[in-house]
Length: 318
Image 1: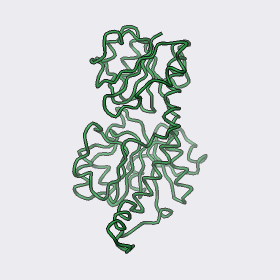
Image 2: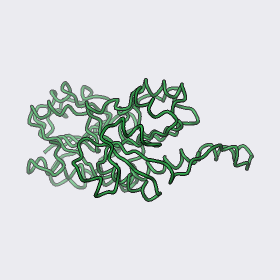
Image 3: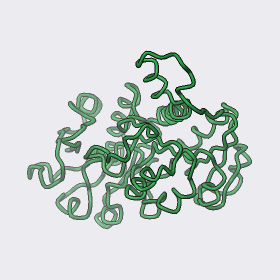
Image 4: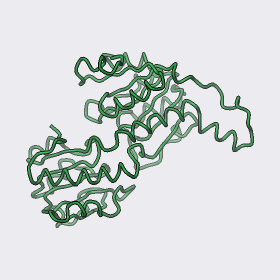
């Protein structure tokens, strides 16, 4: 069998497929390609049996049509918005993801960004570096335990984040229209029936929804107006926030604080409006630890092999 790994020319996650080859060497030939799009692949790659996909290489209808015999695609991540699922299914291509590899890392990073933003760690560090020990230069700071926290999307990561905020004594609410009744009782959380209700209720909102046609630009002009004077964190998918609306909100100083690990366009530097002191950035690193990246690569390889051998895996995307 032939399995290819598609990774980006920019900010690649895999530099050498040693882990994948170690696990699959008795079953498949593994080849790594760093490309911007599928059109850059050599013809030999297009007759692969399976693809392990990383997020910056699009697998839309046109791209998938190039593959002559591909039977399985494993998205090496939680999100799979770079894959045209409808077309893949029409071609009898099985699609799966790896939803559990970095749950703790993303949840921990979300709390790290929240604490860094709320406690103004970036500004406090600069005060000392500028030669001052005057705590008043840091300005007003909220008490974390007095904040009402809103979680958008109560999946694996959203739940882990909610539990961490609860440990700090926060009043935690969530909005997730796809989650059945009763989870609010099991987790002792407040359920908001609409996104607007959550945005109005919370002082700090953290996004943990997948990126789909339904959730693209979930936070736009109206949502950002509802967040006036509040805090917003996104460690999920950049496309959950309308970038033009976000630029406008920052120019008008609508938000009290913003923490972003992701952005709608990660191929270019952020706009000037997003580089102010009220914005805390990290470079799409929330998923990462040494252990998490290794776990992700091994699980993606195992998933690809199981799909090819049995046609099933628990992480099949329905």
